Image 1: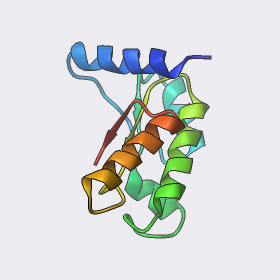
Image 2: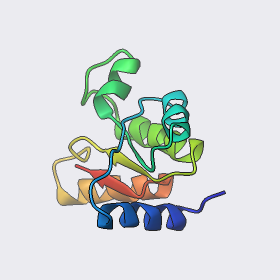
Image 3: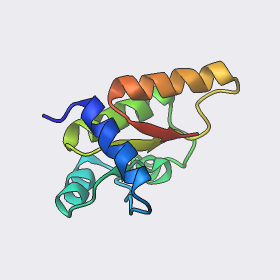
Image 4: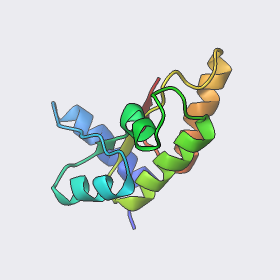
Length: 112
């Protein structure tokens, strides 16, 4: 099993090597498919995940999103970054909490 630290080092190396393609899985099945296609990293998509549950983007709770990205992280041996919407709060502390929860779920990157 690839450790989170190993995934973080792989992700950093990808950024240092120049441009790379990072596809956006919306579920575990698409994450596994994309990893098996040879992509070196994945980035979750908040809108596709939301729509796959029948709601619009920005309508999911932080808990649901963190649970979802945790499943993506566990599904493959490659690095996963996440679209963490607006950080699930209005304060820097809210955003920091979201990033921390994402890291605890296995993420090696995230955007707010």
